[in-house]
Image (cartoon, rainbow, N blue to C red; front, side):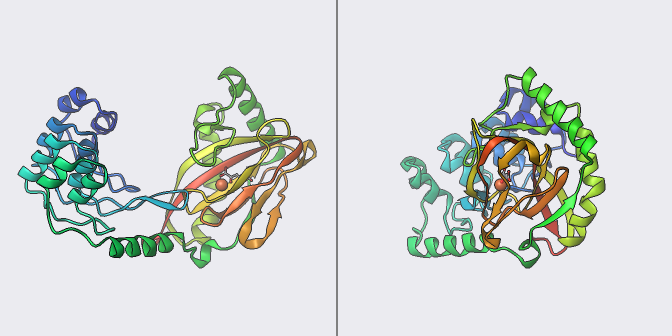
Length: 329
Ligand SMILES: O=C(O)CCC(=O)C(=O)O
Ligand SMILES: [Fe+2]
């Protein structure tokens, strides 16, 4: 079992705390990003931590593609050396090279650590890492093919469907908890999601209902999700409440979510607002669901929240990571 405190110290850039805990288990690897503790330490330039880790973790371990709103934002296949070089940490680069990191190892875009350093303007690091220059057209073509593959929607994710989830009483209980939490915490936030921000509140900020709600979702709809998507793992990436109101944020533009599977649950009465509903571009239709029901759809299919023209609409939104039995989405 990896040491969570050590991971927190490294990811929080707290070099002193990390060095204090370095004797503990260092094998933590984030399943979604492929980052080991060595990747994090290299990215932040925590050279002493890198020195302590290089003999205990593989220097050639690679990351996976990191995707944000349908674009590949960081190529997978990156070693700690790529991350140290791309962020201009020359002392860390030296330690990694000294520990045997391969200077010419290419990420999934075909770029070496030196290529990334050069692209970020760290010329001194780039020249120390020099190898054969990459072919930019080949790299662009590879990047495009991989982005297209990531955006492809497998058959089992093409169809949206509606499931019952909460009773009306349970909806009332959730709404009351959300309203009182929002009142106690300076209201709703608009900065939790960078590109398509919603007026929202993390479920984890509502301890009155969070664990209960996650459990209900797991008991009542996860079995169907596992079956429909032949999944071996389903996990919450995010669970949050969203409010659309005729007088403030009333809609959300067409977008993709960062996860393959999403759902939203209508928490208040459809008599309390006009408009609203979830538009799914591929179906060219807007789904209006009964209170307490859940619209399950792929986050890879572009969708939008239609404008609320009167009153307010309160929904619970989940972003779910899934892995299917063959290992992909
Ligand atoms: O409110 C909706 O119908 C959709 C919400 C959504 O797409 C999101 O929060 O990402
Ligand atoms: Fe969405």
